[in-house]
Image 1 (cartoon, helix red, strand yellow):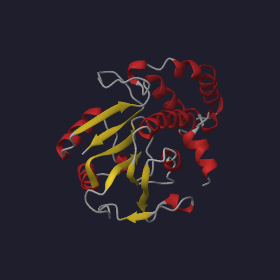
Image 2 (tube, rainbow, N blue to C red):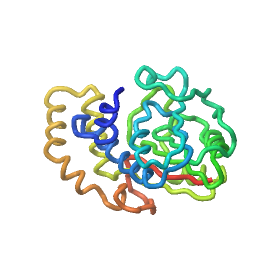
Image 3 (tube, helix red, strand yellow):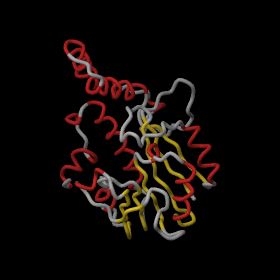
Image 4 (cartoon, one colour):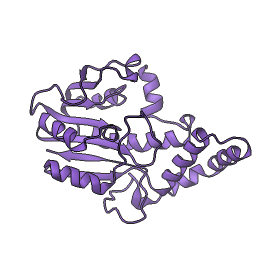
Length: 243
């Protein structure tokens, strides 16, 4: 995958990706922009895939060493080869060696959440941070390695049990983002066809701009909203955990 292709999908997403995937990438790049303002030093991109944000983050000039790490038999490697492989259990890096760990759309694929958080904490320097993102509204993917849909409260318990000194849990999109993602996934993947599928596409074509603009502001990445309440519907979550 070329840098130009990565930019079109991950850095500057457009509606050519489809309504649902566009919003997923749009909300994620907004979170990564926040990371860009903070990241520096030694960085581990765990479960890195095609390392879509590497060049974007390295633009700051504050990253000393960037390691992309993934499983050896990943489907992504015919596109981008990682810097290191791991066995999916033990991160082959020394204790207290990394300033940052990036885990974008990774934790839902790891069954033993507390084990991997402990392992990530082990390789972080004191005061080092994890940047994470996970979907909340999305179909099963990378089957059979799709194990979790986290809530803010499950993350809170995991972070506290593992012993992180601080953490942030933020939403990625609210009800309207979630609605558009679900309708887009249904139209594309649920075998819909004929007039019903056309009506869904027509609805999205007519109303997506209004829905995006009026996504519930108390439940999106555009606000510093952390008071998750009954009946809020984030389309995903992102944040930080600090050792």
